[in-house]
Amino acid sequence: MSKFMQVDIRVIPIYERSLVEQFPRITDLLKQMYYTEPVEKEVSLYALVDYMVSVTHNPEMPHDIKRKIKPYVQKMLSSKRIAREQLLSKKLNELDKSLYLIEDQFEDLEGAL
Image 1: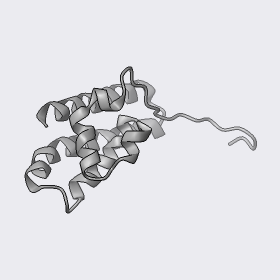
Image 2: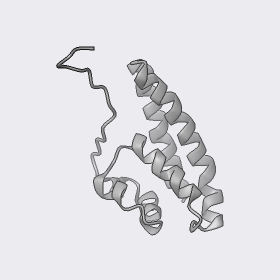
Image 3: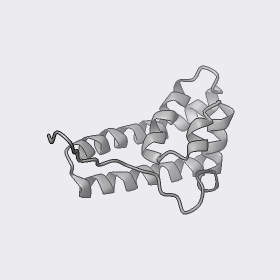
């Protein structure tokens, strides 16, 4: 690795509409469970997966909602793990496909809430 330079490949959020406008039900759920930071900062969906995992482990989460969202969140986490490996190994074409899959999973969850 260079002494004065480094390569930086990362996932950053790009929303045509705000995160709240794009995913109002998911962001409402996050706010209800006191996860306001990711909503305010409009983190990427890639980063938001970790918050969704935390929400499913939150003991204050109503059981019926937890049961409803858990399968979606498990798929998101699985997709994120694959995407992370692709990111680390710089397989950018495959990473792009995995990010689309994560987006689809968020859209599916939004529709289910």
